Amino acid sequence: MTFGGFASPVFLAPMAGVTDRPFRQILTACGKGNMYAEMAAINALQRKNPKSWQIADVRPENYPVVVQLVGNDAGLFAEAAKLVADLGARSLDINMGCPVKKIVNNESGSALMKDMPRAAKIIEAVVKATPLSVSVKFRKGWDNEHINAVPFAKMCEESGASYITIHGRTRAQGYSGEADWNIIKAVKESVKIPVIGNGDIDSPQKARQRMQESGVDGVMIGRAVLGNPWLLSQTHEYLLHGTLPAEPTVGQIKETLLKHLYLLMEYYGEKAGIAVSRKHVGWYVRSLYEAKKFREQYTKLTDFETAEKLINDYFAGLE
Ligand SMILES: Cc1cc2nc3c(=O)[nH]c(=O)nc-3n(C[C@H](O)[C@H](O)[C@H](O)COP(=O)(O)O)c2cc1C
Image (cartoon, rainbow, N blue to C red; front, side, top):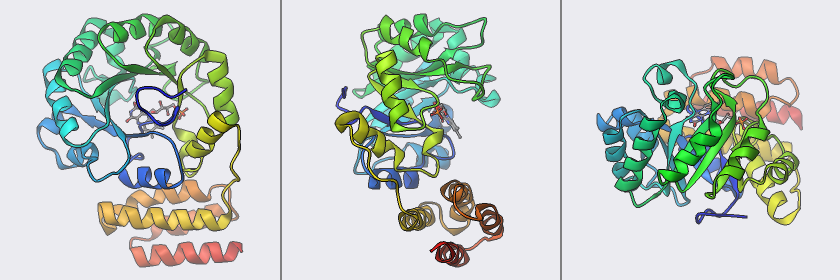
C-alpha cells in the first residue's frame, strides 16, 4: 500500500501557518505518517527571504519531509527545485491548488488549473531540474463550470510527476461544502502514477472507507490533525494493521501541548513562539472542560513562563 519510498500511505496535508517544524516534530513523536512542510513561494526563496528560507530548510529533521513550492514561473521553479534538494527535502510538491486570492491573483496555486500548458511547462522544468521525486497537489477544478481534474491529472503524469494529490473541492468552494470523492476516484482511474486523495478525512475509519471506495494509494489529512497529532499515526495503524490505538489521555494531551510549546519557543523565539502557540493551544483543548475560558486567558499572555504556568494550572484543575 505504500509507494515511492514513503513509509506510510498517510500524509500530513501542507498547511501554511501550521505545518512548521515544531508541528512536524510533534507529529513524528506521536508515530507514523509522512510529513509535508508549509508552502514556500519561489520568488521569496530566490530573494532569500528569511521566512521562506526557514520553511524550506528541513535539514535538521531526521525524518523525510516533502517541501511544497508555489509560484508561476518555470525558470524560477527550476532554480527553487535545486535549492530545496540542497535544503534537505525528501521530495518536492508543486502547489496547483491554493485558493487564496493573493496567490491566484499572481497566477499561482489553483489558477494554474486554468492554464494547463503553463502548468505542464512548470512540472517539466522542475522534473528536469531535480533528482527528487516531484508531485503536484491540485483541486477538482476552478469552479463548477470548469471541472478538469481528470485531464489535469493526465497532464501531470505526462509531464513527469511521480505522484499526485487531489483535494476534491473546486477553487470556488474554498474549504466549504463537501469534498467530492467521486472525482478523486475518477482521477485514480485515469492515471498509472500513485494518487493521494484529500478532503474531509477525520478518522481512521473514514480514511479506510475512502481508500476502498476510490482506490487511491494514500490519503492526506489536514484540518482534522489540528490539536490531534495522534490522528495520522492512528490512521496508519488502522490502515496497515487494522488496530485502533487508544485515544490520548488528558495527561498525554498536556504533555504534548507543553512539548509543542517548548519546540515553538526554540524555533521562533519567545514572542513569535507564544503568538503561534495560541491557535495550537485552542485546538488541543477544544473538547476539554472550560476550554473557552482557558483560551481567553491564554490569548492575552505574552511570555513563556506565564504560558507554562497557565497550562499546568488548567490541566491540574481537570484531574
Ligand atoms: C490553514 C490551512 C492552510 C493550508 N495551506 C496549504 C498550503 O500551504 N498548501 C496546500 O497545498 N494546501 C494548503 N491547505 C489545504 C490543505 O492541504 C488540504 O488540502 C485541505 O485542508 C483539505 O484537507 P482536509 O479536509 O483534510 O483539511 C491549507 C489548509 C488550511 C486549513
